[in-house]
Image 1 (tube, rainbow, N blue to C red):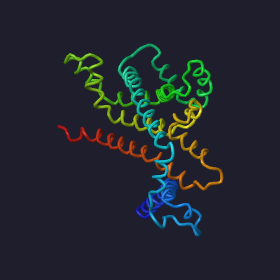
Image 2: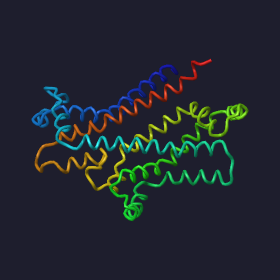
Image 3: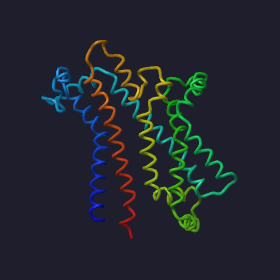
Length: 281
């Protein structure tokens, strides 16, 4: 009876998992198929999932006749510098919280966690006024600073947890060998904390690439839009009354593919870092 109940539970779990996957993957598949259809196929009845003629004409049209490539480049630049800047701030901070003991350490960690709970919309509105005074509106540099600031609390907590999992004896052995704190961090702890760094990279990349609220508020020049805001601008600039559903789907796919490539690549980094030590003596 227990085996039958266990098999039923496993079957129910897989069915539920398949339904959840379908709910998430289904719209993406539909969007990809829509981007490959012609204007006439969009309104064909009954509707068909797959196009009758597979064509990349929509992609060529978007690349040649829109600013989507510029938006993609802007997103790549902002994501790259925001992620690297975040790590430059949070790696030393997480190392300090993990390895050193100082006054009000726990209270400061709690304050950092509280900042993570604040909505981006709440801080964006007052920051807008400061950015006007500083002349940093319509600036990728200002946008990168905001991205770094927003992600610092979460990334610090993630990296601190990974540093805490590394035995303190390795630090002591490194000091005996003549290493200082900075050498211990870069030559001993960072290679061992690569899974944590890769995890932080994944979350920071997702947040920076897909963030909509902050660039929508701080960027007014359409030439500086990231892809998240650029797709909305692309929809607004289309001719009124013209059918552009297939072109919108194409632009959305182009905005989704780079993020998926980055995330898959970073996941491989996580797996590689986790398994690297398993084959070493």
